[in-house]
Image (tube, rainbow, N blue to C red):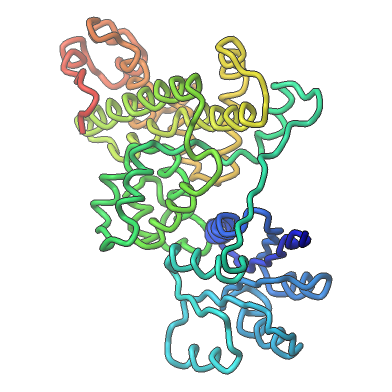
Length: 405
């Protein structure tokens, strides 16, 4: 019997966090057992190559320090046989840049934003032998680990929320089709908290930062462009746990999604009529339960790895861990401070001066709890309603339909 193939070592040299994570996810999709080393500057890439030779390098042409072209030149000087596979990704598609790279024989020269499907196909060609399949078992829980300890251990590395089923369906439809325009993408993605948050985070990185910060999905899509936005969405869909599978968790997730969208819709409706920023209010409302959804996704991992889960343990975990999960995500993704403050206003109003948007979001959260047959008029006594000068008659005009945009 032949020995199993050794897991390949892949070095990714890319300064932009979200692009490097997308590439890493595509590598894992092509070869789930790959050892991935992600680095942000050329000197670190060169040092890693000298310590242990990789089986594949994926490097940005404009990598800080030693650029991708110089790293490719150094790799080719070693005259390794067969030549080390080297993917050069770049925004430089001018004739002179291409001419400089061609003599060094890169395995692939991919223009940013690259085609994720094409990159995945190329990765499979390099990392797998013809007909080879690699199956990776799920991670296992540490012996005797308790649920609370597991959640505290995984909180800082949580991948975020699962994606709505409609997003998965949309991405399948869009693969290989004519690229949609930005308005179409916004229409298809605007109800998904995870996709909204990660596209905003990606649009605010140093690599994408031009002008002011992005705080809405529309602003993020405009800055990232259609192709890059679709690539990032595809990367999310390929992640393990991108869909909830356990019926108990799915039911809880549907409730959280519905509440998030209801708060977002009411906030948008109120803001539009009070001359506040309706899109920012919608975004903050949509993201206010992101921690709950991220926790549900982590609980799915716990259950898939053999951890016990029932209604009681789910309820306790949500009460104890949802808020810390949300806070950790918003900080780690470096969502704009102004947006994080609006999310906080959904739950409470601090003392001091309030923006109109903060008051709108706090009131929208209260209105979202009003039952289908209950009046909105009592909300007139709420602090946010008083400060916005909304009386009972005005509040009774609040829409009761889910889709109010």
